[in-house]
Image 1: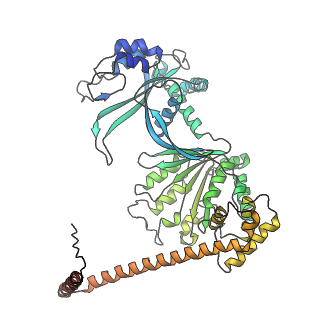
Image 2 (image 1 turned 180 degrees about the vertical axis):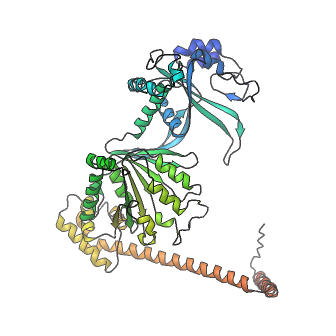
Image 3 (image 1 turned 135 degrees about the horizontal axis):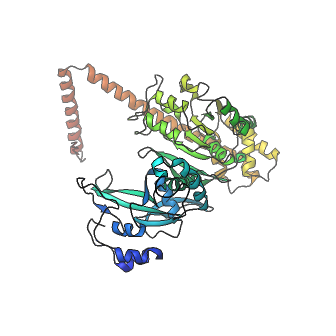
Length: 539
């Protein structure tokens, strides 16, 4: 693994590579690490690592290094290529990391491979050949068109080589030592840019493709500026999200109209960016997140979650996140009311994002490919009117506490064999027990979880419903106690700040001496009564 170290034995190398490369590699292995292409004599040499091959071996496998087309890939595209190659029986060098995967029995952790260091020959799908022929005629420059293979002729070698190697010396990071790694796509022959581009476009198309009843969850990687795919989740149906019938019907009708071909054509004819923005606002635990996931499943769209409160989120980073989101995706900004205060100041410590940067990102959202933006908020009244104007928020959807209709519908969700009369009886019992108080859907769902072993009749009884009230009162008491302690802490800090600001130096010294005397008296009293005296030193 170190620079200048001897390569692995020929037998090991032969066993780790495809048979078509075995003889070439065994006869060309060397301990010298040389670049594929010549480097200027006055340039600074770089240490290069490539397991299990050295660069002369790569050159021997490819043929003439000058008769090839190279493309360096980074970020999301490098991850897509890595995942694609790992699924093929051509790679023999891997890295492992721990990842989560959803199964029918629930989520589980597993070892997930990624492409390791080395050279891999990847066969191109037939679609890539067709796209390459079309794009070569467009991508070629006049110089390229007059040299090498003719435009559209890619019959010399239909494969693409993926080279992953390491460059430079180890450097320290905030976590551990790291070595810069690089991935290069190589096509045999000059002027093969169209072939490489068609291959990358094919992988992007596969990544953005949606399947029925599933969707992909991505989060914006702020440091590397790309959408990182986290997991593929099973979509829930819209019927599993219990909202008032009028609210759900109005929202579904609006989205159906937006995603229609006629609407897309109308936006295009009038030169208006083809996008739609929604604000989901209301009490916590009312189903905002559940509805977002259900919409992703119904309309076959992937979810892209943004964390605007991240300490590294700048105006440019937020704008890039919107622009680089895949078409036909749903971009989600959660709890936007927690970002800015009444004077548009950022309320999140060490977050450089500005209010104007958020507005600019919403105004220029995406490439106009039918993107849907959903912002969530618990307090719409705290949002600036500039954020709520038409064009930035096209439709407001209110989420309130559980209504009588929702309580009965949720009961039938958990007890589908029960009749509507029993469901309404349950709703009436809950209303009578609550009195003037309100209960969110999340609290109601928690009740059904606790009653999962009970029959429908038992769960609907007035005696069982009282457990909701007890839990509700307990949480209310905890909330009041937390707010009381927080208020006392704030008052003490304010009083201490006022005392320190208004005290003269002499008064401050007297106060400090009094405090020291009081501490000594308490210590003496503790020692005299058999207590333990503790000294705390803060450096």
